[in-house]
Amino acid sequence: MQEYVDVCDFACGLSRTLKGQVLPSERPGHVLLENWNPLGIVGVISAFNFPVAVYGWNSAIAMVCDNLFVIIFSSPER
Image (cartoon, one colour):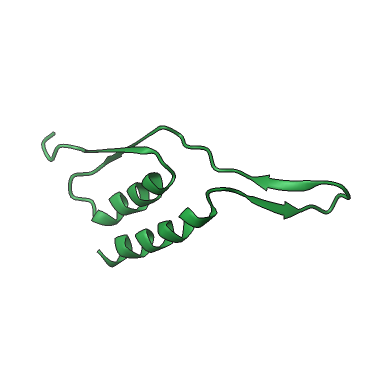
């Protein structure tokens, strides 16, 4: 659970940089522009007994980046 909390904390900090950054370049008269683009739907297939951290790694960052997040847990039956 602590891992999920830590990823949510990281994602909240990440949300402040979504507008993009303008970075200096080594080439005169040029700049680098970092821009985030939403992916739309992010899908994750995970084992039914996998830790909640896998959900956290994907869901927190997907939600901050304005994506729809879908998680599907596999069935414990074969």
